[in-house]
Length: 208
Image (cartoon, rainbow, N blue to C red; front, side):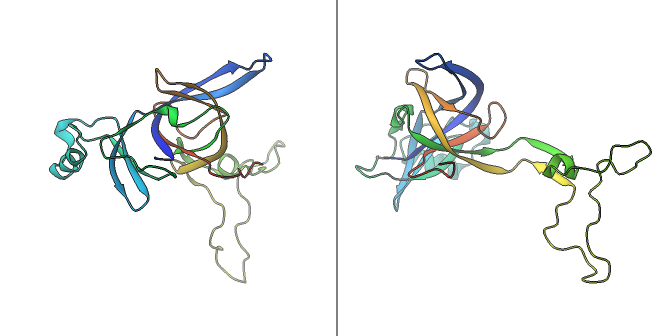
């Protein structure tokens, strides 16, 4: 069995616990995913369908080997869990997860374009007094005489966001098996309708 699913981020809302506490959750449309290939302890899953006009013959042939009529929109490989290995063509749904389980979600963060150091890294900026001209400037970037160059890795203005990011230690709050919805406590990376992968944590979280 696969340890994860491919899904789509739908947005955020809140659910109420038994004691009336409001819990902020992200709603993920997780699956259904078809097993496309099984190899060396890994399970390749497919999510969605791609337009026939945008599919190569190699991609279509790869999908037909698993008994699928159309090529999936997204392919991702997950480690296989203990137990019987799924067969190509099998369908996995959101019920592989359980409420209270820890999961990790991987997605592509929102692109922020070119940003300065105050927004990009949280620099404090310069004085805000009247007449000052370095409110949001980074300040000195290197010694002058030695080593006479900017040190590699110096935090500078530049492109922000649009990166792969994994959020660990998220708790599954609720599962809607009929609509393939997964309610995960907290925020996950990516914009609305962005593709994400949800996998079982498999151990302690860094937040523990």
